[in-house]
Length: 176
Image (cartoon, rainbow, N blue to C red; front, side):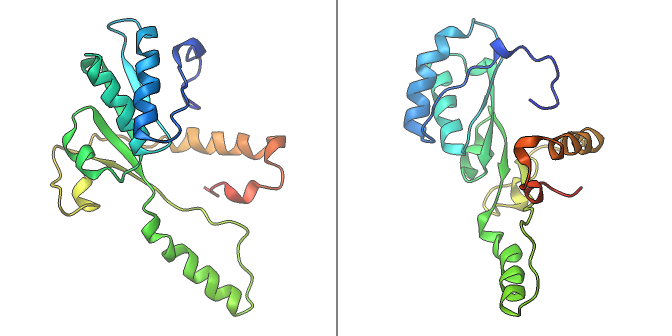
């Protein structure tokens, strides 16, 4: 919500999904009645499983035509490829972390200085680019043409770096 200034706080409902499909389904069932009929529903959670649980609850309530979901992890590839309401997922791909960690470990073993933190790049996986990450699923449709708001993000990062609560942890922020 960092880039959506003036978004009404009362339009956000946070639930404790316990990071599981089952709990997110149950909790979404508990709150779906608080969302007026016809109001768009955006779902996002800590992982794809929790996102899918909420989406299943919305579907069970007959409200899926009003919902879109964005996952986090991109490890529910089949759902991402086939569910029209799951529009994207942030892919962290921890299997590639070795590309970042092995050079750091080798530097440490060689007695060379190592960074305090390393920024790991994530990917936004959509139906249009899923084949680049999961060969069993075809890419469908065209890229949406979304351009990351570099200027706004740089301003946001600069502001974060001034926050007192981040003192001593600035190295975890991307340098760009």
